[in-house]
Image 1 (cartoon, rainbow, N blue to C red):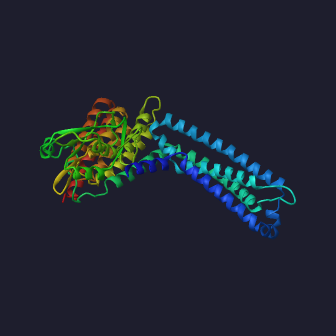
Image 2: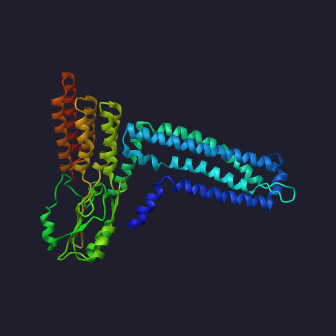
Length: 452
């Protein structure tokens, strides 16, 4: 099931699958209209002679013109897409290229133009001259003209779409929306519901030695089958294997981590080394690839936005506005996470420990969001103040002591950075006032939203 889900996801995000479907549909449409012309074409021609009336030479000329124009537009569209990818990679980060590649609008536009070209070729092949054996697919030819007019509108819309999608605000918003969807999918539980991880501050939930003692066996490593990033994990399969073999499965790497072939992927609490069949089943529960995805890895969305902020803060670009927008959307992501329960890494079944997972934590995502931005924002009062605003917003949404402690540590780091890098007294005063506002906001939130 994990392999099928992976292949289906690769198909949906590929650059050729949807255009291929559209081309296939255009071939079927051309064949259907040609068949309709063959069976009832005279009625259409008699009723609307000025619409469907054309000789073989004229029909061939029209369809040839449309087909030649469409294949030219396909080349132009592909060139525009490549230029957009190059600009996005150099201006922002290469990690957002997959966002453009899986863009539905781009895939549909390429498919529409290629489909019109294919449609005209099929209809053009059916037209024959001569008085006795002549055949003109009048209905199919007229519909080809309609498709050509629609293609013009599609090209205009595509130009508008490209001009809009290359803007920093649109690009950051798309990545943030995908990350928020991943958070909703991975952490659906709201605060206060049972089964939550209340620490969220790097706690070990009893320490690694406690699960090892409960397992009662030595840890047997299962090697990684190849090199790559862990895209997804079939948690249900790991739980099933742990139950069937009466063992504990301990993940050695989390989602989004890079693993080296032959190094431990997981460890199994077994008295003896696992057989080849069990090793293969455990390895099949993990999806390794050359790149990360957002399906089970919301940290990858955070990473993309942080990379854009880092590029904006680099001396060669020095785009403070884009960096501020990145901080704003990181705030929205962490604010959504602040209201969600994060499951414990220790998975039990019938009071028996089965899986020790490595998952996302609130502290890890906050560090991922702000650590590098804080380092690059030294002396940039606009970005530093916006990070304080982010801490204020996120802290007002949670009453978990562990999460508040994480935010307090980041506030201390920002304060230390301001003391080192802000030389102007006015900037120091603005920073100090904002720090006081953050603390007051947290205190007010704690007073009005008592933990229960």
